[in-house]
Length: 284
Ligand code: C2E
Ligand code: MG
Ligand code: MG
Ligand code: MG
Image 1 (tube, protein in one colour):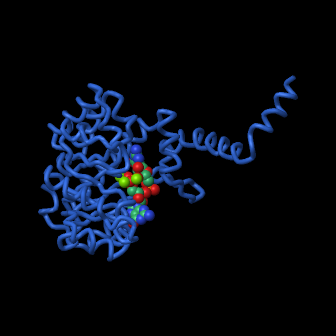
Image 2: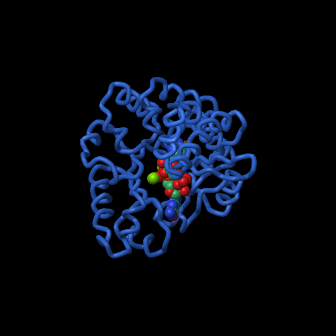
Image 3: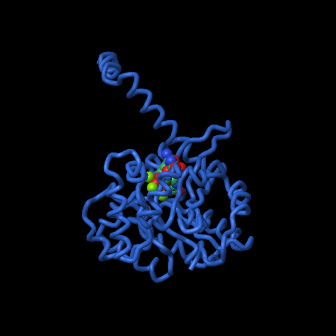
């Protein structure tokens, strides 16, 4: 019977499914060691004010560099980290690393905003606001230098946990941005419950600015709404001058994308920033 079951399994698991299952198992068992073995890195992608193309901030993006030099993108391992609970220690490391780098930039005379991504899983567990407070204090970083990016689905969560955490972060003065704005839930009711500082316009709407599909109507609508609700807008994934020009005309506040800078290791970012005049007005 076992033999038959084995055969049945083989028919069920196509080579493709098999490959994916074993990749996932590999990720699960190796991700556990990635943190302890210092294989995680936070790379930084610059963010610019449209006005004068001033460098005003950076988004920290997680990278996993294997000992053999290969890089595993976050899209591949973050979901595994979320499913296994490893996102808690990994997310805490990201927070600490962002604060450590923000402090170093301050010491170098660059008071810029550092944004990091939070997973929904991190917000549903208690203690996130405490960890943010802990790391800010550990590196003596003013809260206004830190921005937390969450997706719309996180803000749709009306649980006391999520609401309470955001209330505390707000009291502390940490900024809140909505990532991939416009791709999630259509309800905007959460904008009444949470003070949101910034909407990050998803790359798909930036692309459609110039590919003739909707002529940028969605980007325009987001920018208009943000303005009347006194929120800032940042366009993600800006790759061309044409897109930059279109967004500038629509009144978008900030730009992030390959046109002006790719995500890079911290040392490269320090060199990059030295070539751009980061002004003291950049943060608060
Ligand atoms: P995201 O937060 O929306 O980050 C933007 C993604 O777009 C990044 O991909 C970035 O490298 C990429 N990007 C930036 N500019 C351009 C551009 O001009 N063109 C194109 N085609 N792409 C551009 P990345 O680094 O692979 O990250 C993917 C996603 O992984 C992020 O999307 C975020 O959701 C997640 N992620 C990254 N780091 C973390 C982290 O520390 N914690 C959590 N929970 N999620 C993270
Ligand atoms: Mg992001
Ligand atoms: Mg995004
Ligand atoms: Mg995204």
